[in-house]
Image (cartoon, rainbow, N blue to C red; front, side, top):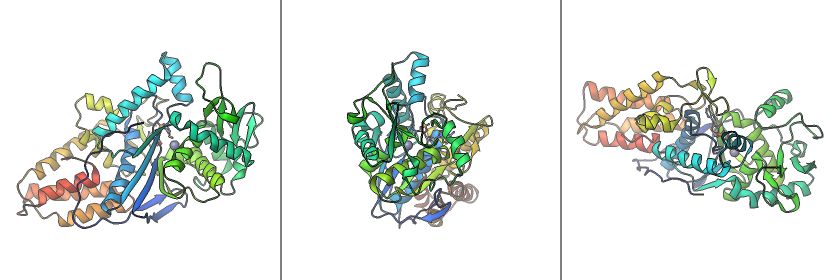
Length: 409
Ligand code: 5CA
Ligand code: ZN
């Protein structure tokens, strides 16, 4: 499917720094060394409700990854999926009496608008689960033929025991995995499974639900993890640089995806780094579509909030932190945007050469956006205090904030 329009990324003088990023699998910071083309897969939305601030915060983190890479004069090959058929989407459509395809299309369209307004760079390949089905079916058949998958009442399950590296992404013990599996779309209690954690690869057609031709698998629809594996392998291949998402995707989604891919290809690992953003909460609880405690990006925009202020509100928090959305967070971001805009509207100002490097250094160090904002704050405060006589400074600050933080002043 089509993605959304790209905002232009200004080129900055000199060259950026290589990205060091926290990898969930190895539980530490690693320095990535992508070739001339860095490869990124970010898990996309399940489009049954509008983009909330939690989604936006996660996509903001991976937008920063791309901006750091682009600043090192690399190209970025970026792929994102849309889980446009899955249980929660079908359940919501049924509850509200909507057609599930219309619901998915409407919410995906709104997501595109939100991403465009927030200046998030678009993926080169934006792929829906439904359109990926012809690529998913042969992968499930291969897993089954290799003895890594088995059938249970027509459904096909992946056997986690087929992967000697199972557990490498999330580093959790069996009890924690079992709990999270039940919470996050798995069915550990279903009788007849070889291992309670085994995830579904292909779900046989259910009465009243959409289904597709699955060749030797029979009619049905794809499991969630194999969806992202099929899309990532088709468009990026094994050994890409980063798979990203919120921390709630580390297990089971990224763990299972890594296992599927490694058993399929015999190669290890699928992604060089597994990168996870913290969870944004509202009123003390994780913002989630199922709980309904949501602040929608589109609603804020309709209320007249400048998208640049929303973006600054996201950037004020380190991507790995769990944090809480409050009115104050937005008020502070609006005030900061005002200060920065005033500071760059002067014909000259204090030299900004050091600032460019400070912002680069902050982001290259595990995407420390709060440190980057602090550096711009210091320049803006100096401008307001004493001003300066460098006529190139305000333009350079604008371009730096635009190129590296995605904020248009
Ligand atoms: N379609 C799947 C991924 S393949 C999915 O998880 N969709 S989602 O719509 O539920 O979430 C989209 C992204 O937003 C995921 O990376 C998820 O981890 C992230 N996310 C969801 N809720 C929050 C939150 N409260 N804070 C931060 N990120 C969140
Ligand atoms: Zn995914």
